[in-house]
Image: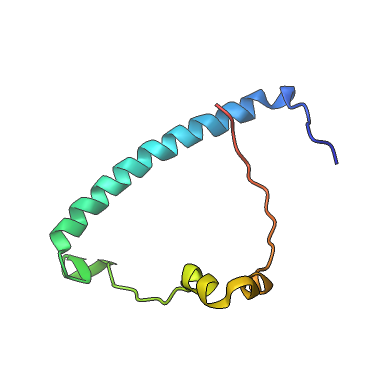
Length: 95
């Protein structure tokens, strides 16, 4: 499997990715500002309505997570026996 591949003919696609990332960042800020405004109005309420119709919900979710630091302390070296390796590829556009 090669470590590098030339994409000279895909420069326009790379530029599209860069422009899209910038637009996503901008729109994420706009979205987060609107959410903050609505959440501030909602306070502790779980539902928000327009014209009496529920248009969004903001409910609490409780979940249990594994405290891996504590588990390492309790299990010591045996902790490694419970680890499972996972592999993924990260698509990263360099600036």
